[in-house]
Image (cartoon, rainbow, N blue to C red; front, side, top):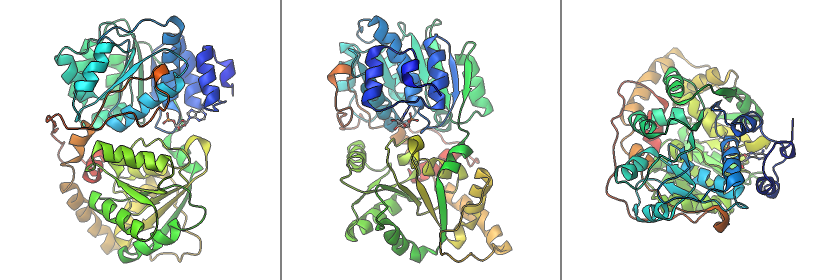
Length: 456
Ligand code: AMP
């Protein structure tokens, strides 16, 4: 494969890539960057961990960096839409990292925090706006954002946005986009609604399809322990105190469970913190930063909170509780083994969770190997099979109330580019703006967001 030096990127970007020690473009980058540089629309099917952020950020920065247009107040040239504040912050960080030798500015816009600093940043002018849909529409309606000068539009994690009920917002935003623009569209999956949306947005796109989820799963070593509920905590402690555990993410099904587990680990002398949807934006960012900088070794997370966590060097993922949605398993274990590194994903499975494991194995097309030295479990009985759906529907009926609000909440503005060097931690976390917008949840489906919300 080509290396970055062979891709036609301007010198300040090449320097930033060298600073980051990126040499070889990932497959999505190798295919997307040249197409986007030539001005084509792109339809990318890729999940996080594939390097898709740089795949769109680099051509955008190249385009702006070549001409270095002045930023105009309230009128960004580039809009990147992301489903969650966490992802928006990560995308902002990526623009700051790759664009650090360029005099370009970006602004982050997301709900749940005061809009004041975001509005100020927009008034000062920024080239790139990274936003979640709810706050973007709020600020557009208040006249703080105009999209008439937009040159490039990026929709990231489109399937997740639809899962979260953002389709009406997306439609509103799309209506405001200028006809003449470049659009880059990314989604981990391509269900019919996403295909329809992409057709509405894109003109003669190049399709890029990389790493179907199975492939990335195959790279990660997996193990399962058959353990009952009362044995989980002890087993977890045993695993986490092994010397090869450098950074671990432990997944809990519920927020309460995540809190309790983090506390117990702390009491047992393991440096851990919990991250979930009930935590404030500031608390979540602090926990992530502590994990990133190795002040803590273990992050106990729920599915929603862990989505898109972009931290390299996670050596272990532990599914303390198995997810009820098999797709979540793939997302969870993808937190390790990022950017080609090796990782170990360990799952605990109680007799109650056996059906969940079977569903996971069906999805990934392989058996999760038994952890070394473990006895094989009893075969699953008819009885446990028939008990499972009830348990599942029970979970789903409890699901959801709080996760959604947080996806549109707690967001802040920051300028970046050459002024911003740290790249992280400069976001602010403050009071809510009193406008949490609950979305009506779809009934009767077991969409993956439902269990996500339940735990997020
Ligand atoms: P993403 O899929 O954009 O979330 O990126 C996944 C991770 O891969 C991030 O931590 C990036 O910093 C890293 N990464 C992206 N592109 C490359 C590359 N070409 N070489 C090495 N690491 C990369």
